Amino acid sequence: MRKLALLLAGAGLLGAGCGTRHQGAVPAPHRTARDVAPAPNRAARAQAVQVTVVDGDTNARIRGARVTVGRRSARSDGRGVAHVPLRRRGALVTVAAKSGYDERAVRLSFRTRPKSTIRIYRRSLQWTMYGADARRTQAQPDLRVRPPFRVVWSRGLGSLIEFPAVVKDGVAYIANAQGTVSALDMRNGDVVWQHPTPNGKMASSPAVWRDQVVVHGMDGRIWILRRSDGRVLWRYTVGSPVESSPVVVDGVDVFGAWNGTIAALDLRTHRLRWRRAGGCKVTSSAALAGSTLYIGDYCGRLLALRVRDGGLRWSRSVNGRVYGTPAIAAGRVFVPSSTGGSLTAFSTSGRYLWQRSTGSYVYSSPAVSNGRVFFGSYNGVFYAVRASNGATLWAHGTGGPISGAASVVDGVAYAGSFAHRILGVDARSGRVVLDFPHGEYVPVSGAGRRLLLHGYSRLYAVVRR
Image (tube, rainbow, N blue to C red; front, side, top):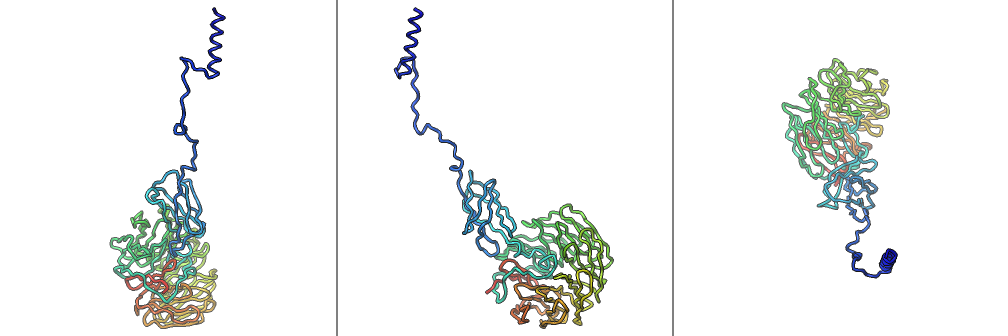
């Protein structure tokens, strides 16, 4: 019986192996294509979004910019479009970067707008501080816009504009005499934000550093505002009016005050790096060349200070108070003297070179470009002199005293005067190319392909006609 059972069991197994159906067997389930799960394919699930990268000043599309969304990135093509594959579409931080431009990060909503645009700005086309650069040359060599002009917008600012706007990433920042700081959209002049300073008065330009606007007040305070909305991030009390415009060196704001101090304020730690008591009123802004700061005072001195600790490298005298700001170019420092009625040139090592007298106050900070120095005098004359020896190249009367700094853009030298006009002169030939019927102190600043002409209390944005 045992042998018979084993034989029957073996036959059963053999039958099952040959496909014979048995009452106790469970048939294999039938699978359709719908029941079979596909192999994972991440690339197939990723959907590309389009990000167009545009130059914010010129509106030109930018080729070769790297666009990064999360861990995914792509470069923009000849049409400025980057195709970035994403596994999910949502509101995501998008970063656009290219050499020569400031990197920009914005949050884009790809769920509702899979095709978006991001604007980035060429670093060389900005005007982020008084004097256009840390040397205070008052010249912007990379801007290519000159008369004839067409006004594209104007904006009243409520009271006197004594110092020029600074411009960064499509926004102009300017302070008026009543202490109101305004941020204006360079495209249309719309007010982005305004910050009124309580009991404030301002007689200097702001400066842009990272995501902050640095403002000096005649109320004796340094104000640090957030660029995006003008909110006060923090402030520092100097205790004396500050009329010099900021120069920011590696995150340190250097300035002079009426009480004769020159100080370096660390914008990261909110503490002074160093403080120098000079004893004479300072309205001049500091100019920087290498590791040396140059600043004037009411004792008629030009001080050359170590940027690291404020230590004195050398001091030289001119023939009267220094109200305006020195300009540095090609190894020379050009120093205006208000009561001395002159412009004096030194080498950056302190050697006297020459002096040019006008017979009237020289409040005007000079502009320097291509071996020429441009400045105005209270006698109403706008001068161009040779940087090497001070010889006159040309001179034009403006009809009223000149108090504000000169400026040079695209080969044209500008001066504003109390005759309520801005004069533009071809820097090389001396030919007058602009006579704008509004002006008072400083003449121009700007960015990209657009200049800002400064009237008494109104800004005018102009482009080439």
